[in-house]
Structure formats: structure tokens, C-alpha cells
Length: 480
Image 1 (cartoon, one colour):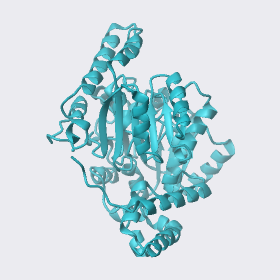
Image 2 (cartoon, one colour):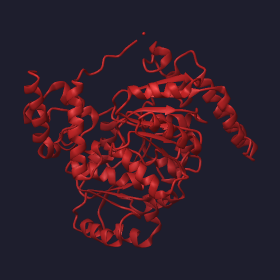
Image 3 (cartoon, helix red, strand yellow):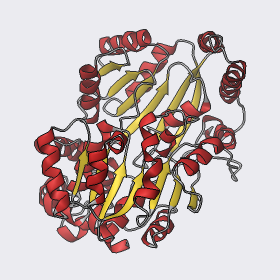
Image 4 (cartoon, helix red, strand yellow):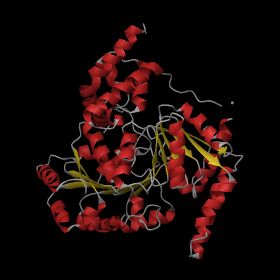
């Protein structure tokens, strides 16, 4: 498996739990995987798919993500396709032919497909070796993102008894876990629960006084980086995005009040690095798998720690250091309590108030914020100092990879041009972490280039020479 990991994905080592999960899948065992965002969930089914004979079926609720995920797999030399409502009947028919001829290893599908008898009958004619249910919390009415279409998946074990089933989620309370297991018939599954501690995220709470000047100062630090700013209302998103543009920032608003076309367009611009700041309500994020978001700001504090954890989870998915800043004032409490007061069910109203209180407690801490956050999700942080929150970080600094910033920017520009040519998001070519390694170690030949994390065989063949040319020119020009 390590050879396949290097050949296709360009990595030398697994992240925690990946190897154990993959081994269980290869032994035809069902698995339940609760793994923090950025922990490498996708690899847990993508890698065994290469080893297994038949087709791996991946069920995902995020139509907007499927194309990105399939593009990324194809860029690594893996035969992948997707079927959802965005495709024409002609295109779906072409993919059906490829599937019949065993020309596809990984197929992404939307859950509503399983409500169609014709689709289920077609699947029965294929050799399915593995089924992965991504974002598995969507099957639970108790989850924060329940999708009725996910109920179509309750018969998977009966329909495909020969295929191991792996359910994956990044956030799930005990109640949601029980629901996933019951709905997907995973009572005998092997459980894997990784740490909720995202060590690369630095979290802090800032007093919401002179908030906009503070925001501008913060954004100056991330001038050309990808940033998400979460606001309370649609009006807030429009006003702040407009004010940021007036301050020469490349910002766009995103909220549920925009037309579907406009939302899709804003999302596309962000993914392709053509807009670097999105000012959004919580409607934004589920369709985003962008690994290089460097800053997430909560301009108004969120109503639950579940929301907060999920939203900061959109920062630093590539494992590089990223910052999460919450602006806090007790005055914003009234905004949240207004909506809580509208809840008719007394139990749900009390529960919502308790969740809000937990956020207020979090904001007012003078002790480690990560310890409090992890405790909320049932995990104990062993270290006395997390090294990743404003309370623990006070005059403490971590040593990061020292790379040549000028070369890094040149490589980013090259990546963007290649991405436009290939019609894919820039991170599909190479992630930021890979470019930083290039700008640190300065590989000057194919062999050295292949040692960089994230450079697999296919990407070496496709992009090796063009990146090496830029690196070599830079090295000669600067006598490095």
C-alpha cells in the first residue's frame, strides 16, 4: 500500500489511523471512521480502491465537490468518474458504458440516485468491491446537516452483501453515531476515532471593538491568501464585502439569498483563486474542499461549538499553519437569543440556549481554548499547553519550514496558469505544502523532484519538467 501511496499520491507515509483502516477494508471488514477535517478520510477508500478488483462506489451529498474530487484523482492517474444531476443523459450513458467495460475504478454518486430503480438494477450488474458513504452524518435527523436522500442508503448492506462498507464523517455526537450505525447496519463494523485536535490551526478570540479596522489589519497579513469570513446575516455579508472592496481587497459575498447561478459562480472564482476573500453566512462551506484556506474569521460569534468546529475546519486542510479568529462581544448574544426565543419546543429551546452558553464560555476563557473545545467533543487534551490558541501562545513561536517566498510565489503563478489551461482548481495540480517544499529544498532534477511530498508518478510525468525549469532558472539567477 505504501508503494501505491507514493506512486499515485506522492506521499511517503500515512497519516494516523489511515493504514489500520485501509488494512481492515482490504480484509473485507466494515468500518466506521470519525476523523477530523484534514485527517485524510478520502485516502481510506481511494487507496484500497486501487488494490481491489472491482468498482469502488463513493456516495457524497456534495454535487459541487464531486467534479473537483474526480479531477484530483484523474490528475494522479486514477480512473474516476461521477454521476449526478449536473450531467446530461448522454454523458451518463457514456459513463455507464465505461463502467460495463471495467474502465472506472472509483465512481462518485449522489444519494438520490439510490431512489431510482433503474440505477439500482444497473449497479447489480457490476462488480462492486467497496462502498464508501462520505459525510455519513447526513443520514441522521440528529445531525447538523440531515439529508432525506441519505435514507435511501439504509438498504446498501442487503443489496451488496459482498462489499465492505465504510462510513466516514468529521463531526458526529454520540446520538448521531448511533443513528449512522443503525441506519447503515454497521453493528459489526470496526470503529476508528481520530483526535479532534487540529494542531495546525491557531485559534484566538478578539474583542469586537473597532472590528472593521481590526479585520483590515488581519487581512493585510493574508493579502493574497484564501480567506473565509463568516457573518450573522445576508446584509452583513454584502456590507462587509463592499467595504473590503473599497479597501482594495478582492472580496465577494455569498449567502442563500443569491441565485443558484451566482452562488455557483462565486464559489468557482474562490476555488480557482480568482477571488481570495469570501464573506459568507453559514450557507457557505459544505461544497468547498479547498485545502489552502489560510484564515477563517467569525465576524459574529457562532451559535454552537459544533458550528464553530465545522467552520474553522475549512482552514488549513492541507496541514499547513492557518489562523481562526473569532470576534466576540456579548452584545451579539441578543441576535442569537432572538431566534432561540422563536423555538416552540421547550426542550429544543433549552438545548439551543445551553449550546449558546458553551460558546460564550469558550469566548471568555483565560485557560487553554483547545482543551475546552476538545472536552466538549469528549476528548481530553493531555498537554498542559496546546501551542495553538491565543491563551497558550502568549511571546511562544513554532518553527516552520523555511522556504524561499519569492520562488514560492513564482511556483504559485505557474500552478495557476497550468490550472487555467487544464480547467481544474490550482490545488489539483499541487498543494501549497508541496510548493513550499519545492521552494525549500530546490530540487533540480527528476529524481530530487520525485522526493517532494505530493509528487506522484503521474504528476512527475505531467508537470516535472515545467516546474523544474522554473526552479533551475531561479537557482541560477540567484546563485543558490
